[in-house]
Amino acid sequence: MDAFSSSFMSTLSPPTIIPKPILTPSSSRLNISSVRIEDKPATQVTSTTTTTTPQSPSTTSSSAVPKRRAEPSVLTLIFNAFDDIINKFIDPPSKPSVDPTHVLSNNFAPVDELPPTECEVIQGSLPPCLDGAYIRNGPNPQYLPRGPYHLCDGDGMLHSIKISQGRAIFCSRYVNTNKYIAERDAGSSLVPNFFSGFNGLTASAARGALFAVRILAGQYNPANGIGLANTSLAFFGDRLYALCESDLPYAVRLTSNGDIETIGRHDFDGKLFMSMTAHPKTDPDTKETFAFRYGLVPPFLTYFRFDSDGSKQPDVPIFSMTRQSFLHDFAITNK
Image (tube, rainbow, N blue to C red; front, side):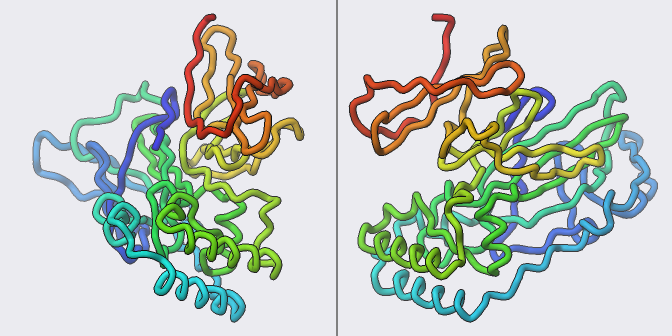
């Protein structure tokens, strides 16, 4: 998925294996370029080419404790049993491209959140003048899927390295979308995977019906959004957004101690409806940001922009688009 660059950038791929391990500063060591995670004071290194910096404990002791997920309710377990029936008796055999055994293996295995943790420089030193942050977005399922799974179906997780005054702080946090919070509180996945639904139409229809029953039972409110915020990051109007084209943007921020916080789902004062592209484009001269959304009913394509302050301007329907289409990205030019 996309990484945001210009103070917020980079690509990190922390590998692990299924089932998900609990990553804490005291139990993990994460190699990032020329740094590693360690929460104890560094011991003296004899190599003449290696320098170390003193280590401090995790920036926030409360966040170092892994979050405990809720136990599924009886109603949730009943719905999950029906989901298992769909997986075992209605779903066709999973293709390798949607088989979680293959898709979520090696470097693509899910990882847990990691609170802000100082990294030890093990070779050379970070220039004191280097100040900023690398941050990337990508899919990372909160729960291991029981059925077919596509890489794009995972919950959005942000990984960042904040560098300042010769120190580097690493952090991994989920984007607190409506879907992520509802499933965390339920102790189980609730929303069916979209992309893996193409594995079988009959099974997809059955999962859709089961999801409708979950909604009627009060387990999920789709009016608050079903997006994953797992595709990209965009910075405009002095705000950083986690994006996914199936929902509104989620505003996020990097705190002074290197933690990542979700501010919330953002509709730009009620002017943005349903969704927008996950790849908006910013004019480097005017600082305006251009975007679009597509739909199943006319107008099938709608164009809009944000001014340099991040205020959304009126929609411009594109009636020349005469049928439904899946539009993922675009480019802008001077003309």
